[in-house]
Length: 244
Image (cartoon, rainbow, N blue to C red; front, side, top):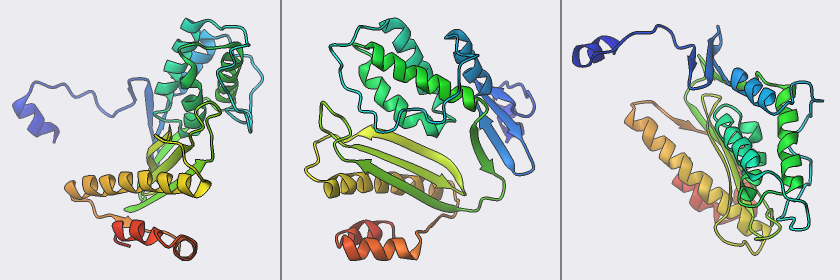
C-alpha cells in the first residue's frame, strides 16, 4: 500500500507508528495497545494534581448534578478547557465517557460543585494514567455490543441517558453516552430507546465491515436472547434486524 501511494503522491515513511496526536501506540505479542499516558500526565500537571490522592471511580456513585444556581460560580474558562481536554481523552478511555458527558452539560455556567466533580475525574486519572485499549491480534470477527439506560438520569430535563459499547474482535471500537431526545415515560421505554439506538450503530458497523470485505459474526448468549424474547415480545423486531 505504501508503494502504491508513493507512486501517486510524495510521501515520507516514518516507520512503525509510535505516537500520533497525543495517542501512544505500543506493539506487543497480543496486539496493539493505544493509550494517552503523556496526555493524561500533562493534564494532571497543568491542574496541579500530580500528587493528589487517587480515586477508584471517575464520579461519585449516585451523584445527581444539576444547575446548582445557589452554588458559587467557578472559573468558566478553566472549566471549559478541562472538559474539552477530557473529551479528547475519551479516544482511549471509555471508562470516563459517562462522567465527561455529565460535566459537559454545565460549560455555560459552571459552579463549584461541577468543578469539584471534574477534579474527581482527575483524581481517577491519577490512579491509572496508562490505562488504554487493546486491539488484539487474534480477536476474531465477532461483533458484540452492550447497552443500558438510566431512568430520569438528568435531574432538570428528566431525560434518560443511553450508553453503549461496541466490541469487534474483543476490542472496543465505538462507545457513547448521550441524553435521549425525549422524556421516557417508563424505564421500559428508556430501555427500548437505548436498544434502538444501539442496534442502528450495530447495523451501520456491519455495513462498514462488509464494505471492507471483513466477515462479521453477531452473537448474543442464548439465555440473553431467551430472556429478551420472553419478557419483551417486540424485541423480536430488533433481533430480526440483526439477522440472528
